[in-house]
Length: 108
DNA sequence: GAACTGACTCAGC
DNA sequence: GGCTGAGCCAGTT
Image (cartoon, rainbow, N blue to C red; front, side):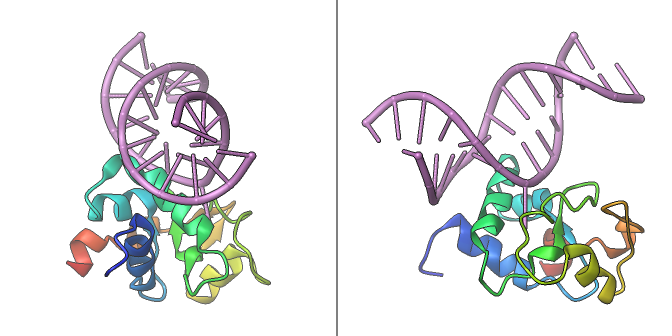
């Protein structure tokens, strides 16, 4: 992509997340080759407000919906994820290992 | 233009 | 085994 922004790469990976699956900020950052920039992934999603980004499928490494408060939408992240078959309990994804989607492993 | 901040993660104590 | 500090980079002040 012409835009060599870290953001654009993040957006593309997030769009590639299949329904019923989730990934972590660190997984995306690692896929892009920068482990320490996990923060930027979250920051990128923060800027993704109003865009066609399924940000609700991105959680932190332990499956907690850290950014649900920042997610702008009629429905909560939890509700959207539950509609895709993902179980959320106490803001944390149940069976996280089963729904976890690693871009560097499944996309590549 | 320098300092601060942020949806994270890992390592060390 | 829980808490603290450091690191990453870009956008905002």
